[in-house]
Image (cartoon, rainbow, N blue to C red; front, side, top):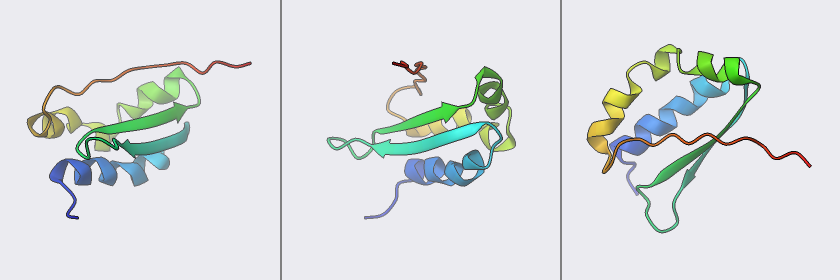
Length: 84
């Protein structure tokens, strides 16, 4: 199966993101029901590391590249780990 332009852009981000200081995990997921739906599970050391992530060159014009390829605007959701 040929990779979509969207998938290529998203997958090309993985190597530089994994090298970023403060990155603990960056795991891509694709929907079982819709192969054009993606979710990335990210784990960062702290808030400062996440803020620096969005300032990296590979993140620069990402929204402008992605939005024309998306059915609806990119949605970022933030969660915190429940420690028990």
